[in-house]
Length: 231
Image (cartoon, rainbow, N blue to C red; front, side, top):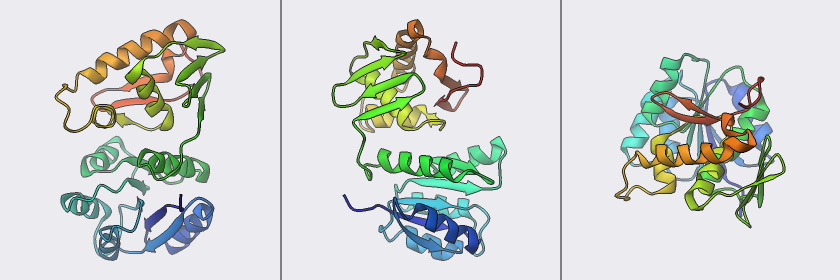
């Protein structure tokens, strides 16, 4: 598989250049320094992922994002901005972003999120094994081990845990889970997500791993390790 291409739309040229150098081993990188040029490049369908600043000359990032979504673009978008309030983040998700990372940030975290979004879009090869904290998923055998104990997950229970671990420390909405596991044209209702999430937590509870999955009220779920450990 060829390297995926990332389009960075960021008016800070030094930051954009630094990100391009850092991501060069994983992806090809294109850049734009204002919102109008960025929108034109985002719509030419050459990029596999968009890293987008909000405060841009010419046109702000949220307007750009709304415009490309209205034009039918489904390119994964990671907002990278200094705006760090929950209101700002919700505006970003409502405009159509897939993830949101605030400045300043650790480059390793950015790389993790970039790889996760690219895997979700099918632009990176998946590993045969995934590990998060005490959880070990064997994707080839469809088996789960937690703290050395086998956890029997069936069908979409396994798929749900895989999706969460594929996107560690990222908020995933119920709608995203529903679309990924059941599809846009499914006649199943959105409430099925809560049913499967409840089932998954029940199966992880005996091995003390249910606490890794946290609910973000009115938004979705996130899988993360806390300093206090799982409960």
